[in-house]
Length: 130
Image 1 (cartoon, one colour):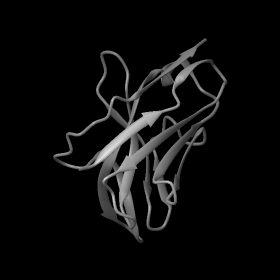
Image 2: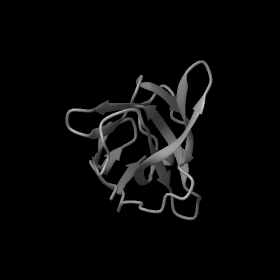
Image 3: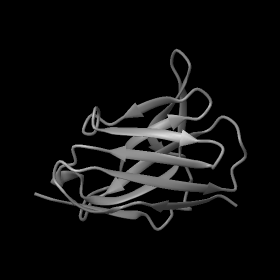
Image 4: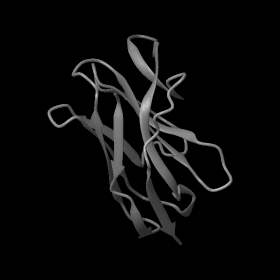
């Protein structure tokens, strides 16, 4: 059974940095698509960043491009989200999840959760004050 446990959230001032971690279990080593999502109060969950573990190819939402970096540590079954230059609008609960794969000049991962995925973790709260 797939399990994802997010950690690393916190409260920082605007301009600060945080690194989120997502511990994976139930996955076998190999090529897969994983991503980070966030949901602010009263808003829909949105995709933030994805990574194709086979090649390391990444994709970012325009709102975080240049500020966030998704990465992986296959030896530890972890994915990370390094967040810098944080803004108050980044305040949200952050989740990791498997995402939908696509192909364009190689495999990449869309900013969309895998259809039918329902095993969302507890998430980790990120709060940015101005």
